[in-house]
Amino acid sequence: MTTFQKFKFPQILFLLFSAIIASCTQNGNEKKDIEKQEVHKYGHLEKDSIHYSMDIEATDRIDSTVVVKFRIDNKLVDSLKLPEQIISSICKTASTYGDWDVKNKRTYKFNPKRKSLVYLSEGDVIAAIEGIAANSYGVEGNICTFVHFDTKGNVIKEGEFNAPKIWTN
Image (cartoon, rainbow, N blue to C red; front, side, top):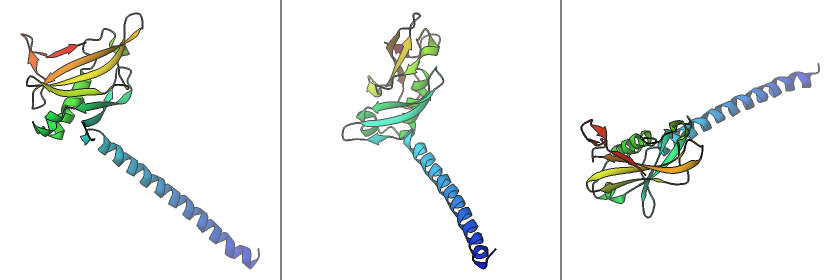
């Protein structure tokens, strides 16, 4: 081996390992940045020019984790001054009741084309969850489940069995 080859080989080896280490470190940082963005994306109020909205992650009966988009009534935030944590809790709890009156629960999935709503009606906070489920013949249809909450984020119970105040359409 010549002196030139002895001199260049360690430098090339050093550059090769440096490039590998730098790319691994950079990919790790990018992954952490993406995870931070996703953490802040869900469960937080966002305001556009007209409405408030909130996205949450929920699991449908097909065992898929999906994003459920909610439109939040301005009165809840501006007039009642409900904290973001209570609104987030209402959205998450309501999504667990989405399949309340579905006969074939394993077919239930959230409707990605429609936003679910959280609004104020006669003193109750109502969450309307938009979903899709199949009947016994396998034909899919839209279903909307309405869950009633008080202004503290608790599901309203009714009747002698103290059942949640929920109805479907």
